Image (cartoon, rainbow, N blue to C red; front, top):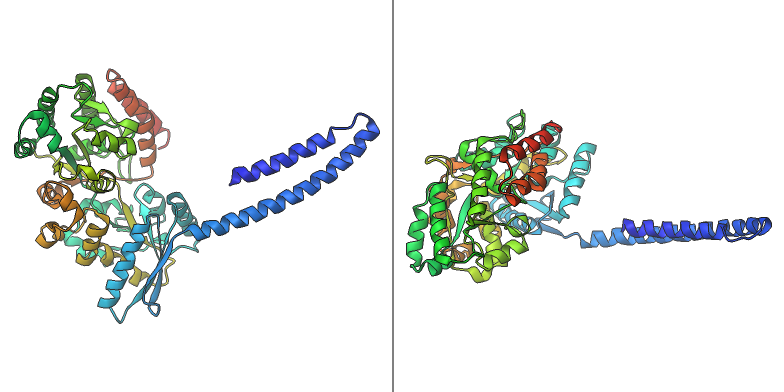
Length: 491
């Protein structure tokens, strides 16, 4: 809309200039200039009114378009909650109803407002800095978390006490993602985001001329990346097509590199203390291995940079690739965008470089915070942690959102993990929580998300990955040094 307003004002300026320059003589020119000036003023006033009216209409329309829902007991304590995913708000609404049933003496009413992603984070940060206008509870996407946690307990309420009843069974790495530099927990997670390997068993079985069970046995025998490559070579030999690949590598995402770092216990950010160092052996090993895959025809470059886009979904449905690593939240991409693939896919642990290494890493996520501006801090914190960590909360997160929950007590609960009415249990060949149990919470690594993270990710995705994957002969050492130089300029 700003472009429209600027265009109106530029048009006014052009009219004024044209009118002022129309006279052929001095007197005529002066008269024309006066007339032009009067016309310009009049036109400007009309344009200003048009701009003001349009702006007011735009603001009203924007307000009308922002989804807002209120749940719970109108006589209870009122809480304001902001999110950028409407379904998240629906989760809190349902949990408010359950909370009120269980706590009739401490009922709540919660109003959930869903803003666009960028608008919500900007609005939250602005209100925190101003010291006014923030909600009681707010979702914060993990990439934005360093900005919000910068204020620590001046802005946010530590959740340690409210989370304590659940901590014994919460995945440590995921809780640590939302720690501040002071060691306190300021965000409650929705999911682990544990990374696993997805395999198209049906496509593999057809190409290799064996049964699904035989394919699954081969997948289950994969421990190392060497094992993974051998199975991929067997598939490629069987499929016998140059345009069909074992996997795809990403130029627009760093998930593969996070896996490598987690397996070696590395973290290129250096955490809160730094300094950041991208020239890690783990990163170099992964990139070098991927270059080899591209040269041998084992892998292709993901369309549009990574699998989590429309072109990536189509590539999967076309069976151009039959295996790739992604966080377990990618399960919802299958059910939402690739329903015809139901019954074809199997989930397994990621391979490792060396036996005994951690085999997963938590990727992505949204942590929910309580702000110090809340008039009901303790109640908001208790409700938030209960809604995201308790048995009731985790059940709704799994059923409604399809996330791999952080409370590991649910992983081994047969009624929870093996519920055949659950859409994700129905979609995949095996039960996702069986894979999580096989991985184990202590084998899920963590890469810190701190102030330098956006710089690293941006350079990797705009330059480094393109250099080494678009040109598999490009020096990995040189590419990482270039990235390090860019990072050093920001440290």
